[in-house]
Amino acid sequence: MSLSYFQLSVPVYIRMLGNLSHLLDKASAYCSEHNIDEAVLLQSRIFPTMYPLVKQVQIATDQAKGSIGRLSGITPPKLDDDETSFGQLRERIGAVLSYLETIPPDALDETASKTITMPWMPDNPMQGEFYLVNFAVPNVYFHITTVYNILRHNGVPIGKTDYIGEI
Image 1 (cartoon, rainbow, N blue to C red):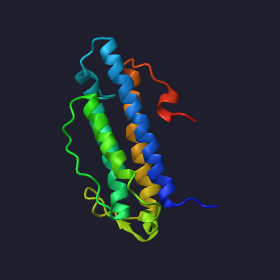
Image 2 (image 1 turned 180 degrees about the vertical axis):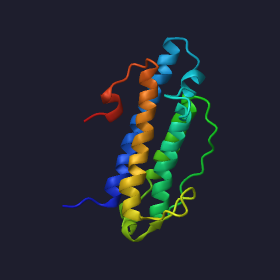
Image 3 (image 1 turned 60 degrees about the vertical axis):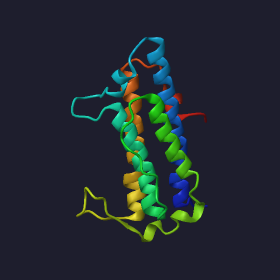
C-alpha cells in the first residue's frame, strides 16, 4: 500500500506542531519555576546569525500551513508575526492546527501535477511532490528541531520523547 500526499504531510504536521506546543508548555513552566522572563528564552538563539526561538516557531507554523495551502488551494489563516509570549505562540500553533484539521484527505491528490514557486526563489520552481517531500516537510522538522535545541541549550528539561511524542 502506498502513502498519499495527505498522509505524508497533514497528520505529520499535526503531530509535530502538537509536540512543539508541548515543548513550549515545558519552556513556560521552566521560566515560571526559575523566575526567568519568557522574553529571554523567546529571543534566545543558537548562534548570533540564526533566528531566535520565537521566529523559529513562526517559520515552522508558516511552513506547515503555507505548504498545505499551496498544494491544496485551501487558503490558510493569515497570522501576524507579533507573538511575545509562549501562550501567544501556542495560540498561533492552535490556529494552524485548526486549519490543518479542516483539510480533507483528497485535497492533496493533485500534488504531483502542481508547480510551486516560492517568492524568495522565483527562478527555482519545484514540482509539487519534490516540494512537499524535499522542502516543506523537512523545513517544518528543521525549525521545530531548532526550537528543541534552543530550549535544551538553555536548560529546559526536555528529551527526545518530548520532541517525538508518545509512540
